[in-house]
Length: 110
Image (cartoon, one colour):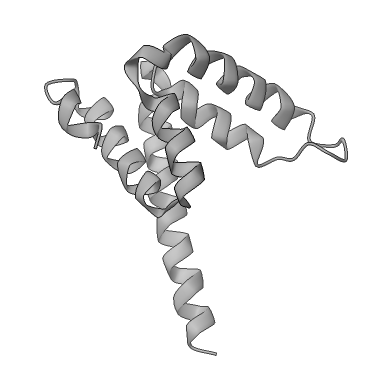
């Protein structure tokens, strides 16, 4: 878990990393490994490049191959290095998790 190594950072960063750790545990194995590599401190330039490319591709979501799903993923990667994005992205993760749980409960009740 990367969060343990980041103790001592500011609260927004700690909370974001806790959410990202939680998200990482829920991803399929191959996806979690790639996500983990991008979250390493040494991958900062790669993370910034991939994040910017995903945001740009997400803005071009009207094209058939690209999708809107790329935009939040790119912002998620950029939030690790840009403090102004940390709090809104963490809140978006919390909201998405709550909505996912609500959707699953409603679906299970059918």
